[in-house]
Amino acid sequence: MVNAREKVTRISTEERKAREWALVLESAGIPYQLSEHAAHWLLVVPSSDEVPALAALDAYDRENPGQPAAAAVAPEYGRSYAGVVMAGSLLAFYGVTSWGGGATAWMRQGNASALHILEGEVWRTATALTLHASVAHVASNAVACALFATGVCRALGPGVGLWLMLLAGAGGNALNAILRGPPHGAVGASTAVFGAVGALGALQFMARYRFGAARRAAWVPVAAALALLAMLGTGAQTDVLAHLFGMLTGGFLGVAASRIPPHTPGRVPQFALVLAAVATLAAAWVVALR
Image (cartoon, rainbow, N blue to C red):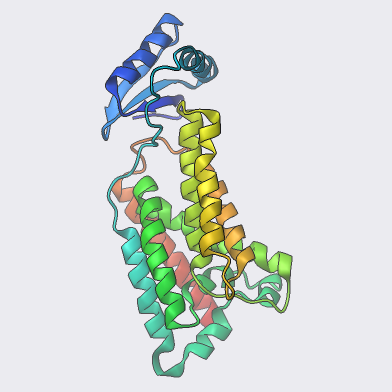
């Protein structure tokens, strides 16, 4: 367990490499702990020794370029089907909102109308994430959600992952409304999906940057996230700025989430966070439909 007074300075899939790093710290007189978690070796130092520890390890890595660097992989929560559940929920909610030709009423009350958001109806930034204009629209977002939401929830857990996507999607819609103003409006989960893309890029960037990968290589996940935005988020009928803002918000939240210590939160807190996120979204719809 890593507490708030400790920092993970290196993670390796190779025990030999991890023990080499431990010897570097030992020779420098820096206290450390070496532990194994989920097939990864974690080298932990007190927070007060983080700076000298990183300096010593970086110097060692520079002086030993012939040895391949271990993979910089952040500790993961583990297997999760939350992304698939989210995708199924999007499809199910589309069926509910389309039943009996009622889609127009749902759209009117829940879309991310810049005019209404700027007038204080901030719940629309969240309700709009659950609305879709057509079967093709919801199907494409469901597939993307199953892929990228699964990645985020595997890294951070279903509760933290769901909240990250909800906040990134709502934040992206809010920024889009502020920048574009009336009469702009938007619907769709894609803003939250690109929030997941941004978060995944940020998590990998932080893992590579903090855990010993070459600084230039640390930017590769960020470039990959931007490439996904260019390929998937800039079509003729897409809200490019909403996607961009969602990805930027998700990236910011991903950096913050990278500070969560390994092993926490566990299953019970994750389940509580899932319930809280669902309750928050349901409350937004109650307000929207009152």
